Length: 147
Image (cartoon, rainbow, N blue to C red; front, side):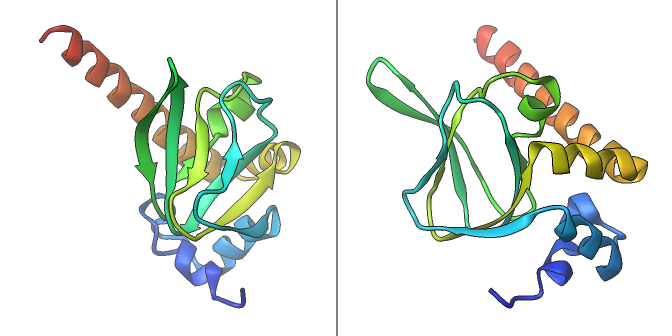
């Protein structure tokens, strides 16, 4: 795990313009964790006590309904997962499973909050991305109702 994750983070669109020093700040607030393909990271309904940044690999975001697994999306490098549940204090709205070997930056709830409070620029970027995703999901739902 000696990869230059600080350099990798600077290539993600969310962190465009960040220097290696800025990426190191982000890394210092969390821990690098590896997960094997098929490993479930959290389940729908769980208490939200961490946020993830995908560094390598992919994560399936899924729900289980009537005995079936419905994959909502697959998240790749540069994607933050779980931030809204942590910030809103709500349970997980979906489950997460590594769909291949996965490396994430794992922020515990309080460390994530402290990081956001200490860097308004970072907070704005993360919240803007989260809200943009919510709006896109809402529009997709509205569009599906019209067909």
